Figure 1 (tube, rainbow, N blue to C red):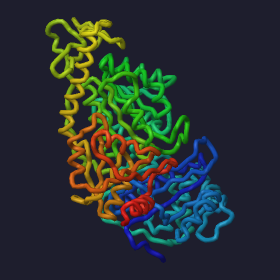
Figure 2 (cartoon, rainbow, N blue to C red):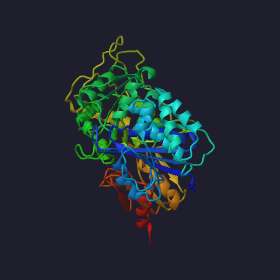
Figure 3 (tube, rainbow, N blue to C red):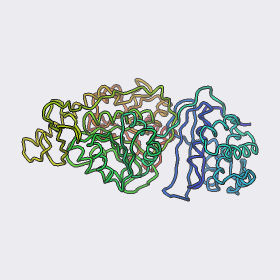
Figure 4 (cartoon, rainbow, N blue to C red):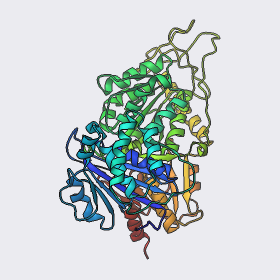
Length: 557
């Protein structure tokens, strides 16, 4: 039997849309989780309801990871196309295939899923359980662990799925045993789940969204758990209705978030300006995919940074955070709620498909915490003025129905009471009031870790990145002895923290998944120029191997 020399393993599970590839991949991820590994799972699928080639890439390692790699150790083929497309690229991988669908297999083991289902009088939906059982045996995973994973993570009809899995398990031979790593299993969750839980931790009352990949799973997760989480989830008819309903909900006093992707956010931009003028606190989750226009609806990208930074007419403060992994997604989604309500501004959680739909191991005990500021509420003394000009620019909040408070919400230029005005002095006064809020927000953010510095401390060559790309950068930096600089807060941009992070760097290389180097351009605006950019814009994320090759070409003498 051929063993794995490194404590790292990668599996590709492939089939057609509608074959349950994501669920099968999730079960494989849980098997590795119960073996003591950290896990990352990425799903690749076309924009089709049925048909087309789908696959899940599951990578497991003895250290935290957030990117898949180029190597495939196991190929689990639910159909012939998976073998045809992927086997040429993994000449050393161990193959397990469904004999009913794969008629040409140069090497590997097969199981007849249909025969097992028929003999066990099981429903067809249990077919993937047979493939999971066959994979587990091929990987030398004990049946006790397999049974535990099925009972814990597939509780509905667990017995019949276990029967089917056991039949397949007994039909194949252990070919490439995966070693067990002593240690506890960690929580596995997607980036969107982490965002949702972070919003709830920040006091979320209502989530409003229209489904749009890759933000859709956030809507599904919160809707499916709304009662348990104590929130209201609403699915209106379109994204214009989403943002306007969200603004109304927040005006009424409910901490509210909305979610979308680039095309849906296009429809929300006038509502974003409304929030800026009317000083309405709202969190907007934007999960990026490949554009422009409809683009690649189910693939990733980082091309909406400039759009989110400047969306909406006029000038007004906003908070934009771009987490790299579920831990950051949880913490900064919570912070987005808190800061949005304190400063009465729109706050953005800017994600992408890689983060939103990826599944990661997360150790909650190592998360730490960020500050939790509270909103300034009206104390009920004296006449209420919704937009009272204060030294900080922050007016106290009261909500419609509050005794003695007349709450006027106005998208026009207005005075301190919310009454429309075109008076030059008043317009100037209220503009400067909003600018003071931004200055206060910038000052408060200095208490937060707005720029993450990782990799080799003191290295004179650094990778500049943002969002999910940081995970591949971390691995490359560890391999090549580089520093990684990741601005997490992109608006307002924390110049001092960023300059401190870049101190001692002689060679700065920007790594982004867009065609124009949008973060590099933002950094130049703040006095730090990258000498090179490494860009990728085909809808697929960087793998550590690909990125390492491209970095080495840049830094080679």
